[in-house]
Image (tube, rainbow, N blue to C red; front, side, top):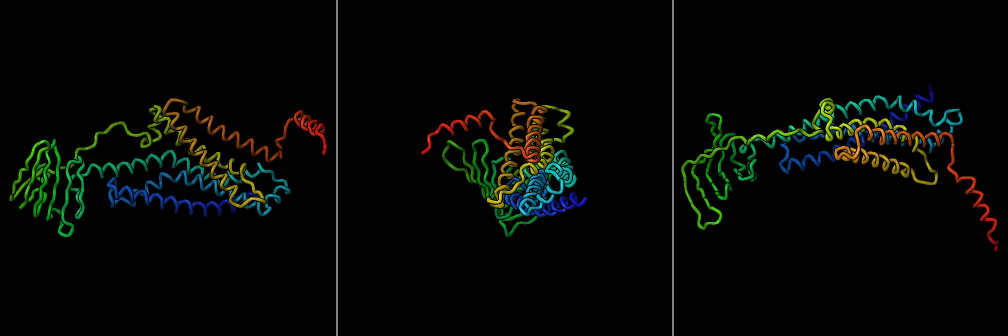
Length: 374
């Protein structure tokens, strides 16, 4: 009991500190990316915090897996460095005996990773996609921001209204530049207002001037008006095609086992299986070289995590291209990693030393004996 409780307390302290650091780093990166999307016009500036929360929630399974990996390696490395592992080894605890307390500590985290990868990941992707779609489908008048040149949804109009004189339904100093079917027009007006007639919205301009020109022809048509109306209804809704696989629920992916759906399933199940293998990998790879630095082993472990995560991405692409099946990938990748990790763990637990074959050793000794001495 003392052995297991001490191991779990050590892992809990290390996991908590690591999780706080990684969440802070990831939230900072997501905030920068979200602000970039908002400034580029892909999401609404009012939805920045909500979009950032959904994006971070979708990345939480990977954050938890990496936090668990670093926490396990850091705790075990500290025990090696402070000679606590020697105490446990001399008391009869083998290296494989650490698996039980480590999994008893990690099973709630593994459960959360699996549930979030299977259910929260597609839900957060759907929410962020809906926010982007709603912002892209907003009307032309909703795109107008005071003091800024804003482009319409179709891309053939540019609007501008005065920053200091803008109101809810009226504005002053209106500028509109349009280009449609080879005809260019620039319209300016002292004021404008929005009117709804039936199901259509109109922009009514008052006291302005309109300049029209046609490509390939010389001359400009100039007209002045006291009142001019132009339709400014909502933009046409985006046609709904086949939804992306990452937006579908796990249940829908299982019902339609296409290549793209199976590739997405391999990613979701792969996150859960990788988290299970991470525990064995951490125990097999954790060790401290007294002559090396404290961060040398941690860098190697992080490299192993990056390679494992990239293999998940490669496997997802291989399934979508038809190079490998869904079940074969799970068995070869995750089963292969588990077997290699267990084999390395048993080797270290049994103190097996990889030595050359006896025949090779005899040949090397014979060569040494035949060499002339100086």
